Image (cartoon, rainbow, N blue to C red):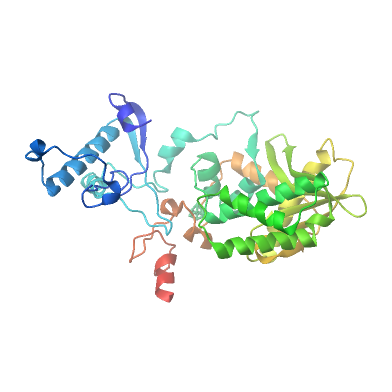
Length: 392
Ligand code: SF4
């Protein structure tokens, strides 16, 4: 709902999003000084005597913008949530008018942190499950829970949204291209190198937010061609992006398997694509758990329960590496354990090195960087960005 549409209405909880300097309130632009914004009309001479000065016009603009924000804030009956956007390097710019408001209401306006998170929890938590109700999980949500229960709570329980990073979008380009190639393989279609290159470039076009990076595109082309030449074109594809579900009395876990293929001895092979730059033992352990989830789902699958999964691989596209996953001792006990802990609302913060990049670090980390004010972990001198700037 726009602020103008909300005029005259009131709500128990009002959330005001995108409060960002130069965006909301909107930046003042002088048509005469910035020709890009000049509109094709002219002021008749007789009105020019009423023309106000540049400064007056700018003040009026900001007064009006602040008035609109004031109207929006006063729609709240009980709780007002102000939110803004961190820039790509993690900095948060608060518009001066909002900063003044916060300073003059220090008792009433509090930054969201661990001490007052319960305000949000009471409003939006979906965790009040009936005894009979199942948790809806995915492998990625379990992975998030294991890495940091608080991060799971914020993302999957309280539904805080995070925007796609360039890395995520780039991973989607690789996945989407391989899905098309695998489906075509299943139908017996062959691809020339030139056709694959066109396909990859067309897939990039579907992600206009990705920077137009010629080097990255060329590397992606080579990474995918390497996969295709060394594996993709030589296998018998059974399924691409195959959906599955695992049902337990406490949870339902759903997802999709990147690729199912027939092994040389007629059994089932599983392939998963990763955009990783490093594949160490820790990552292989994580990937193995994901594959065990697939194996378990296939054992119950109406079409594939008679086939045995005997081979599983990861293709780490960015480093063009195939990693074999050991299927001995496959177990999915870790899912049951995570599901139990989630049901018991165990959502502790696990402060770790990844907190530096975590979009929720402003909630968990109390320390602030002395140079830029960004959240940082205990015991650090500077945040990672200022540290990097110092090293460079
Ligand atoms: S900042 Fe750290 S502790 Fe907090 S949610 Fe993110 S990963 Fe977890």
